[in-house]
Image 1 (cartoon, rainbow, N blue to C red):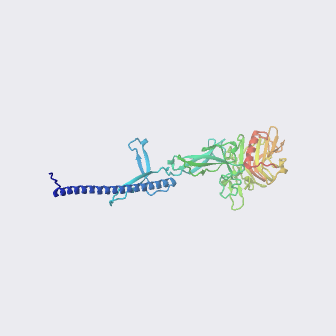
Image 2: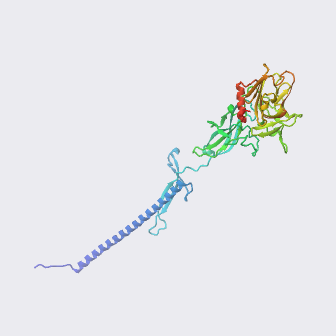
Image 3: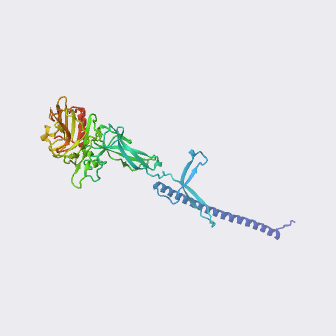
Length: 466
């Protein structure tokens, strides 16, 4: 008969102990794994939260940089890239650094941070180039001269232009303008409250028009510019495309006549100012000296006031500035040499409102409006272009008023070799704006006559006929 034998109590207790140990180990491992899983979840959530916040901050920085140049809270930093490379390959990078701490899960006071970098791709905020000084000068022939010919006019240009912020590698954009027809009075020493500004003196830009292709610092003078004003608009530009404030040069007056050959005297009332006037406390300004701007005789041919003459006065009108004479008033151009038997041509822009003489040489010759066949048609309110050309070889004189001519034999005087006295300008009831004298014959059929009368017409805007 078989005998059945079970586990003893000791064996059971040992087995239970082993099972208890195993259960304890498994339980602790399970608890630790669960705690680690919870910590990992919290760390992940905190990292993602910090990363998300960094992304939001970076987006705000980009919006601020792209929208306006207003600074953002953190300072702009610089970093040299490729420091070991050759200098030409190195790059200086500007950037903003943003960071966000990762929330601690264990109370640590020094949590880790998540960092981000936002580059500043805006162009550098460079200063605007600025013109700080300008000067213009008229270059006539071989040198600068104002109010005198000295040779055929060559150029008028901007002599100097200083630019602030030279570090910008700036350049100047030039554009020249010329005044429109009918502004014969130059700026010169005119007061800023002069009544004729915009009437007989041009103002920019209303009374100017652009000169095509005149975009350098020098402007070539052409005959059609005579009696007009030019001005240059200068705009500083930097190589990065930034343009500064445009600046006007001085407004320069072009004196040149279209014909200089055989010119011996030129008197322009618009050039009488300052030292040539007696400035009374009240009343009209008295003319003491009328400069000869042809400059072929130095200052010897200036028309000066003799002691025996009354005072001519300077006055202004819509057509320009003029010298007003009266009976017993004249000016004497000492040094003007024009023999009694010489050929000559004279042009005058004058207004006649009574008997008077434009210019004469005693009994030898006279430029007298009374000898013109059109005298009865003269309006005392208007200026006319009067021309007198005398040919000593034929004894014929061509008289011209604007576009009308009247030729006759010796109507201007005796033209003998005797009786030549002191040359007088004026003496009578008339106004003279300009007087031009040549020692050659330019009658109405010559190209010279056409060029000079067109110059005077354009200068004084005298396109009407009486």
